[in-house]
Image (cartoon, rainbow, N blue to C red):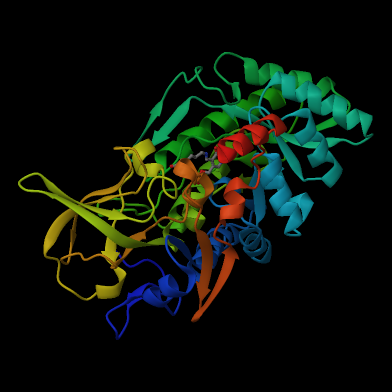
Length: 446
Ligand code: LLP
C-alpha cells in the first residue's frame, strides 16, 4: 500500500498514521473507523494557497465541503484561511455551527430551495453560485424582501468535460447544471441579471469534472470562459471581478493514478487565465477554485476488523470486514479502486490474493477485488487507504448499520471529530404510531 502523508510502518510492524498506532486506534475507538491525517489535510490546503500566493493575483481557494463536511473540518479550513463551498442547508448549518465566517461561504446547487436561500441570506454568506433562471429570480425576490443585494456568480457550462486522463470538448447541453454557453443561455442570464436590483453579478463559474490528471481541460475551460467574459464586456458593458474554475484535481488512489503536483494545476490555471484575459485587454479578475477530493482524499484511511472468510477453490477467497458499502459506497457506485494492508502485520510479506467484501446483504458490496495480503486471519485489522473524500460524506445506514466514528490524528494525538452512531441514533427518528403500539401489545399478550 502506498504510504500517504505521515503514514509509516512503526517498530511493532504496525501501520502508524499521525504518530498514532493504527492497531491502538482500532482498539480504542472500534472499527470501522475513519482516520484522518490532519497534517496532510493542512499540507494540501497550504499547497493550494501558497501556489496562488506566488501568482500575485487575488484569489480564493474554497474547499468543496461535499467531499467531507464536519464541524472540525470547517475549523481547519477556517484556520488555513480558505473559503468554503456548500451545496445544502445541512452543509451551511455545519459551517455556521463551526463558527465559519459567513462571508467566506459560497453556496452551490442546482435546486436551492427558498428556505435555503433565505437561510444563506440571513447568515450573510459571501456568494451564491446561481445555476438557473428560476433561482436567479427567486434570489432577487428574496434578497429584495430582506432589502439586501446578493453577490453572485453564474455557473456556466463551457462545453468542456474532463475525465481522469483526458478532456473532451462537447456540446454538453445535456447537463442538469448551469447555463449553457453554446446555446446562448449564459448570455441571456447575464442580460437578465443586469436588470435585477437585488443581485450583484461578480462573475462566472465553471466546473469541468472530477479526479482530473491533466491541465488541458482547465486551460480549455479558461479559454472559453474568458472569451465569454470578453463578449459580455463588449456587448453588455459588464466587467467580471471573479472567475471561478471549480474543482476536480485528481489524487492517487492506486498505482497508475498520476496526479500532478498542486502547484502544476494552479500554475497552469493562473497562466492561462492571465494569457486569455491579456488577449482581450481585460483586467485579470480574482481567480477562485474549489478543490474537494485533493484536500482530504489521501488523508483518510479506514480501519476494519476482518471477520469471516469464504474460500471457493479455484475461484477466489472472499475476506469479509465489519464495514463495506455503507462507509464506502464508491466501489459499488463508480467501480472505484483502493489499496489496503493489514495494519497489525504491516511488515509481513504478502502470501495470498483475496477479495475484500463488506457485510451488507448485497453481492455488489465489495471494497477491493484481488488484493495481495499476508495470510489473513479473523481479527486482523485491514487498513484501506485514500478514503478521506466522498466516504464519510456518502455513508449510509443501509441494513441499519451504524455510521463509523471519524478521528483526526496528529503528532501522536487522536481526537474524535464525529462519534460512532449509537443504537439510539439508529431508531432515534423512528415513530411507532399509536395504533401500531396496540398491535405490539396484543401480539405480546397472545
Ligand atoms: N465544485 C463543484 C461545482 C463540484 O460539483 C464539485 C464536485 C467540486 C467543486 C469538487 O470536486 P473535487 O475537487 O472533489 O473533484 N461523489 C463523487 C464525486 C462527485 C463530485 C461532485 N462535484 C466521487 O466519489 O468520486
